[in-house]
Length: 234
Image (tube, rainbow, N blue to C red; front, side):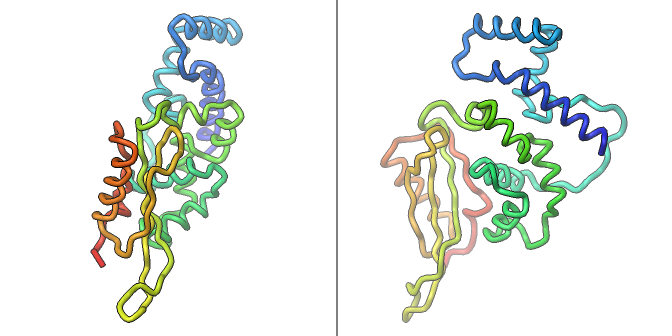
């Protein structure tokens, strides 16, 4: 545990060094001058600084941690698709606690109650650079927007599905649950299209996607919530 905390502290220091180099729109001359300033102030070599930057671009925050030697310890893991959902929830509201993230995942039916332990999710968000401490640091240094968001409109869309209320829309006025599907532009955070549907099926995501395209054109890439868009039709 002590070694892990030390590795995190070192990675945090390295990220703070790199922060000026993460600004959008830097040309080669500007980047070279910034690297020279950092090297002069800290005493590290340009080669080392370039290595830190390459590791961060490839692996994120975890790439900045010192590479330990020896046999790695086995530990509980969270499926990649679920971890990506947890990261998305943290990105949407950086102040969300681990318990709140787990609760939302359970409410939306992505995991079974009690399936994810708080300590496990906290550890894996820490490794990916999305702990509460990291989110505060990104906000303070201005790294968050540069790291998380695309630069231009229509570069990336996100789909999202939420479980809505029960409404009297069933047979003979019986209550039936509705589901909200939305598509959001990553760069602008603008809701491109959102609509409630009376069934949980992949066709509702396809319909919402088609309407968003009709309004705003075709995006370069889309992040689909695969776990939430599948299910029996009602």
